[in-house]
Length: 328
Image 1: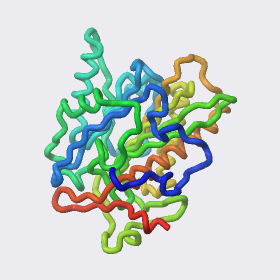
Image 2 (image 1 turned 45 degrees about the vertical axis):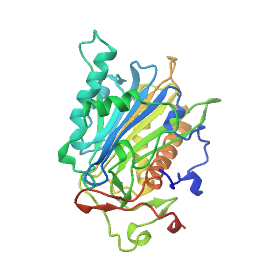
Image 3 (image 1 turned 90 degrees about the vertical axis):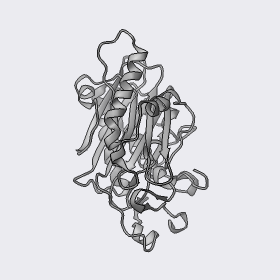
Image 4 (image 1 turned 180 degrees about the vertical axis):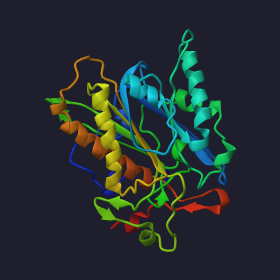
């Protein structure tokens, strides 16, 4: 996103914990991110974002539903077994089922002898800026995101599953961040990636910044079907129950940036651990990890907004970028 800056580059510092080298979910070793963006400059503003742990295998995981007005395919099996068996794919609401079928193709090719698979695919409604009823996501789009996933700094803002999303009255998209807390004397990494598309009033370090004030004449944009998908990865040795505690705090962190948690907002968090050792941390040691999740998600949400650009989409609807000169 040429000409746009992340929160930290603008002097907006969240918390006191250090970040990882990329300040991204990919700071967790083995976690890759890939995007496919569909943008015809007019009615189609959508895409796919894939979060791919490598080497891939069953990982301890949990899902927390802040508000269940959404479609998170595969979540009940993660709840039941406490295990992630699939990459996590994000897209637009009406394309989630096609995306899930494409992830199934990917898993079947990885495991030719397998008889059952559990794709995990989430969504937010990008219908304010994209012609969502056209369901433009194809199997190839999903496979390209999965196969092209890499460990570098993921693109943010109007990219992948965030191409057509709007949050807190402004253009939003994909955002990511990380933290490196020390737990029982050992540094661990916590990373977050968000697909931001929810209502409320943008709040930066406790200061409300309504779109009506930052962009005079813009008016408030509250598209229907507001939602947020949050993915948290960590190399801390945690079990599924403890990861559920992390996922809850990820949704709580939305409140820091002004989320309204409205009736129509499907707010979900998925948390997983890549740790290989069996012994899990005691619950009493988790406070630094909880702080890391809250801070990483807050900064990821701000990055999703600050890296996005003003976008006009279907029916001439426009979502404005956050103007840096008005942040104060």
